[in-house]
Amino acid sequence: MARPVTLCTLQWGDLPLETVCEKAKAFGYDGLELGLPNHLDVRRTDQAYYDGIKELLAKYDLKLFCISIHLISQAVCDKIDQRHKAVLPDCIWGDGEPEGVRQRAAEYMVQTARAAKALGIDVVAGFTGSPIWQWLYSFPPVTDQMIEDGYADFARRFTPIMDEYQKLGVRYGLEVHPTEIAFDTYSARKALDALNNHPAFGFNYDPSHMGYQGVDYVDFINQFPDRIFHVHMKDVYWSDTPKQIGVFGGHSTFGDSRRYWNFRSMGRGRICFEEIIRALNDINYQGPLSVEWEDSAMDREHGARESCEFVKQVDFQPSGHAFDAFFDKK
Image 1 (tube, rainbow, N blue to C red):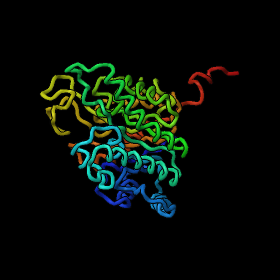
Image 2 (image 1 turned 90 degrees about the vertical axis):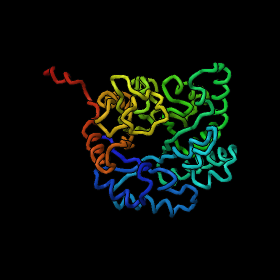
Image 3 (image 1 turned 60 degrees about the horizontal axis):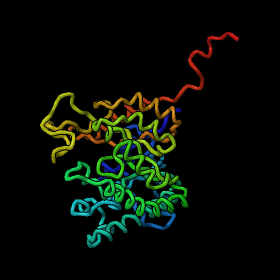
Image 4 (image 1 turned 120 degrees about the vertical axis):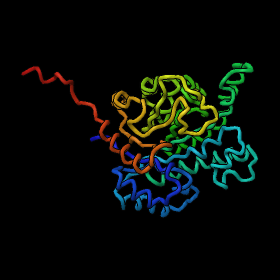
């Protein structure tokens, strides 16, 4: 049986959850990845509320596998500024004092793990933020100690959160992504090392954020076979020829045709999903394939529908035997 194909609701946060359920079912999806804060209030402590969420999904024959906390978890380790105010709920932003924002975001992450348990799921996906991303290009020169201090700060903030996740039987998948503490294979290894390979910490695998950087996104799966907790299916295009706006994005908006790269609907970019599926089979990943649809040049309903069809077509389960096993008549 093929893996379930789910729709991440972060890009549909302007619609009520029931409307998203109706559309996801019509598009052909098997389930949802609920995006916070719009489609779930993890501050609720009454089980009846979470039972109601499950009943709503069941009404449309949809399953729930994961909660996404990207917008809020970004604030845990970040240098807080006005950008965060635009995406954080008021209960996290508060008066905007940076350390208070970070602490409230951390507590919200723990509340999310409790909500996951109440919903009967064991994976939360999101970001970490980073205290050192602004030093990515090392001029003026950045010392090794400055980088190590950044990973130490990440560990100080995330270890207590991951301890709570472990107690609740929930795992956290960091989406390896520019602006996070881990944005390629090397930095992902450093993040794991900083947390002493905490069992609750792993990755929400999304190849689109690695492909345009020149990172081997298939090898990433092979490097962390026991840490791929969730999978985003998202495509990206990058140019064969130089562009006016390079890999850093040039302060441009997504979709600008002058950019070296842009996210695209599934099957319309340059990610080789055939090799990804084979690698996921090699590590026996049996979780959902969650479409995080982002294409600035396409109607989202058209894109969500075609992306669901694409993922179901490209996915396959591994064989239980070698292809030549039946050559022997014995």
